[in-house]
Length: 419
Length: 151
Ligand SMILES: Cc1ncc(COP(=O)(O)O)c(C=O)c1O
Image (cartoon, rainbow over all chains, first blue to last red; front, side):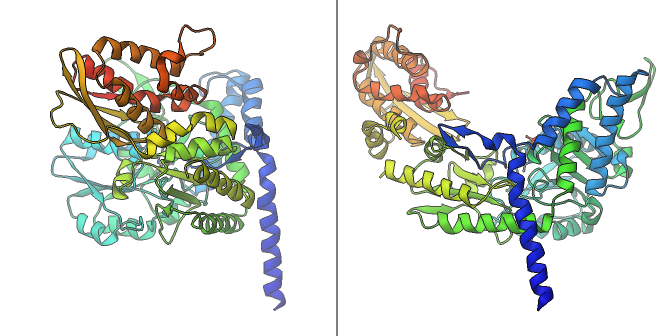
């Protein structure tokens, strides 16, 4: 009995620690339209804690120089900071080596890199690439482009009415023609958390390569790429409390090694002559040109920040917010939740009567509440649910129940205005 | 709350609830599709132009209150107008939506009922919603049966 109490105690301590994180985010301490800002658009981009802002500023003020190129002091510091960030990321996602951590400008570039490079080396017109109806456009269009170039077929796993992937259909789509399966870990438009273990195991059975779009997963869970056993995992710094313009592609080194470069330029070569160019080793082969150095440093600081967080307590906090928001929202007349998967990240996508999402967005904005409205770069999802647009409130570690109350108040205003 | 009421004036809410000239126009000789990629809204504008006059005009599609009301108000006003009149109306509405009225030559009185759209100016992210239909009309008059987009 006492041990149950004790563990409840530790958990409530951990929860208090989570609630205290909000004060680390200076952007959240401001008013908009003379009301305290309620930021519920973290799925589009999270705010940054002071520690990340400081790390970027310090780097810019004192350590900036190009990386890997100079013998001088600043270039050494800059290189150390850049490579230091790579190592932090490696350790955080449990990759086998730093060769497997490629810095990109974000998830979009990470996926384009894999698609272009694998497309060139692996796809023919008798092959198939499998994506899903739930994907963000950035995990659809790069595959469409590469399929056009190679003649491969693009297939999409459909969704159930709740917004879960239809795994029976997935089984049907897989065959010996399947070369690549590209799936989102968490849907940005619906919040659905996909059963990756099952999805990856089935792709393995079909001998397909598996690429995970993790853009929406990294702010909520700690990823272990070896436990997942995916071939590639893509994510963005700015969705996990880091800067924009920096992201990561994790790839198994055995695969990356065999893949042709994505872009050509400096950094990615060993020697260049007009007869022959020798490519650099991993990960540099895929990092052409001067990288986003301060972005990488900022992402490293975000990883440090996340490393101190109790993810079990965070999961409980976010699930509490989502269920509170869901309960309060469905009390409103005309409330409809888009995406009711059993396993959901803290994303509430919705419509309210026949008030257009765009109008809802404007009205709650004037109440100080920032939500996203529109198709969320996932037009097939909108088509599936037969809606033109939804409102989306997405919750991150710094949100609390007051934020939910303010959202509901804002939506009530909209109902009054449109009554 | 006051400035929200500036945007969502009664006339706008009414035209959103009961859009005028809504639906297809079978004998239209110009059909233009307008898309607002930001929110995924689509509208199709049907215009019947005879003797340099807008004989008839209708629209259909989905959109936010601003875009539906703007379309509805536009069709109401443009119907029966000469192409020159409609063209000049476009210019005036465009200026009303995008520029600061004080000190500008725009006379809101000329615009009559359309002046209710002036509140949109304070909402830069919503200007495209209000102007979509007008761009579609302009391209219908220009004779192109194209898809137009607010981007
Ligand atoms: C699921 C998902 N994938 C990919 C992306 C693209 O990320 P980025 O714009 O950072 O490249 C996003 C961002 O909206 C996303 O939510």
